[in-house]
Image (cartoon, rainbow, N blue to C red):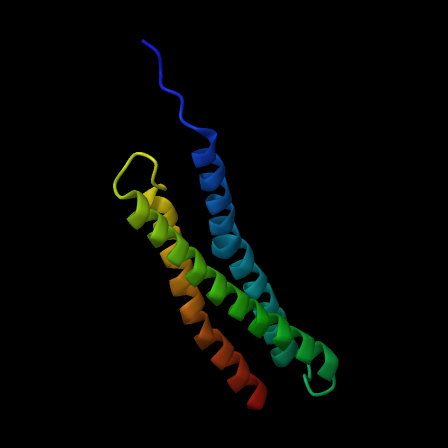
Length: 125
């Protein structure tokens, strides 16, 4: 009995899709968390008004990273749903965990706006 070979194009697409999931599900949230932590520490333990350049850089990192994360997450969700609809429930469709990870990443990106709001409130007060 021979095992049928799966074309390598499916594996390369899944690998690229998994890379997107890792970038938008792990790397960008980590970048945003680190920049928010640094900005929070700067605001709480130091005078942010004296370090305007550093404060502006950390704000730009946090907001820019959030926008990149939000747009990329929704793009990955859209690509995952399009692949799922196109292939249906066939053997060659992506693993459902990829779609779940993308949806969790998009939800996290949406909820990150509350962190940005808290940081802005902390800087104003």
